[in-house]
Amino acid sequence: MNHKLHEQALDIVTASLTAVLPDRAVQRALERFTPGPGRTLLVAAGKAAWQMAHAAVAVLGRVDGGLVVTKYGHVRGSIPGVVCCEAGHPVPDENGFAATERALELVRNLTADDTVLFLLSGGGSALLEKPLLPAAELQDITRQLLASGADIVEINCIRKRLSGVKGGRFAQACAPAQVYSIILSDIVGDPLDMIASGPAYPDSSTCAQARAIAARYGLRLSPLARELLDRETPKTLDNVTTRVTGSVRELCAAAAAQCRTLGYETVLLTDCLNCEAREAGRFLASVLRTHAGSGRRLAFVAGGETVVHLTGNGLGGRNQELALGAAVGLQGLENAAVFSVGSDGTDGPTDAAGGYVDGSTLQALRQKGLDPVTVLRQNDAYHALRAVDGLLITGPTGTNVNDVAVALLDE
Image 1 (tube, rainbow, N blue to C red):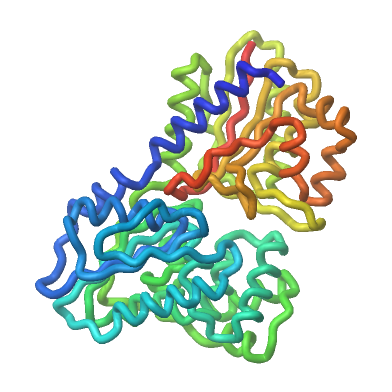
Image 2: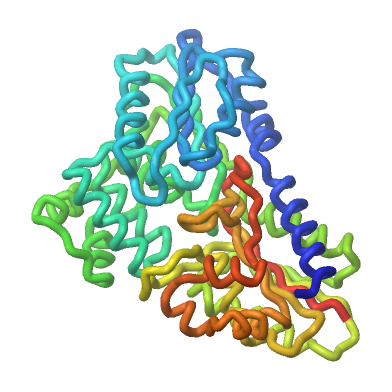
């Protein structure tokens, strides 16, 4: 391993994540918040829900009741006046269903004088859920979608039609109270109706689109599920104000700034990355190979959200697959590295935020009897990278604004 590049990768990751922590972002959004004369309630959902709620209560001083539902291991302590719940992600579970019922009970029978401060971040699609069909079937459909290679917009187009809170239905449940929604975006382009499946935003997708997605990926659906795909979602909401605060653009800008601080000429390739994870890795490796021998210290930054098409039963996430996908292309480049992390600190169903490879990784894998092509076919990037000290582990970060990948050439 190139220890210098590895240490620089850790520096870049730390600086990037620090820049997009939700505390300041929530504070900025609350500068325009004026609650009504009645009660002020707080509901937060997503991987960054605890951090967002903690910051909001610190600004407001108190709320008249609240609920947080976030991923297992993401609650960091108590918040005055707020019940904190943990639940399953990316597949919803009974704890998430129960927490959602508590949230709906909290906002039931509100008046026009009441206000719901709704804090939303990525992961909310799984964590805030009221199934309109048997829970086991919803979980099965979620697994099918996650394994299909569908992108997050396609996945959420289906999920919001199978839910009693997605696609604007949570805001409907709060009416006539006003909903002030603060969103930490984890989807490229910040489509408000798709972030966490848009519980408090009018749905722009159509039943025809949902049916086409189901057909495109060959989803196995019951008659009830197919009927739900034909039920239209709310297209207008008159009780919601929305503020987006924090996105992948800020994550990429912070990564690029730290690369420059370390002395690299830096190029932001895109903050709209959307392709197969391993192909993104191969592309970044090819960019470094093109410039190898130039005598320049170069950094290339790419942010967004790649996808993984499951063909095996291994363990990993899209950032680990991206990194491992770059390993072959970096072979022999002693001063080159590619790394990728998810800003929430948990890449797929693992304890790693992402992965790191450099010009020595392929040889190290082969010495362990591991072939990257076979590993990727098995979707087992986690175990392969762990074997060569290539995992990047941050722990839960308290934020979630998508992923960032960096390619470094240190000549």
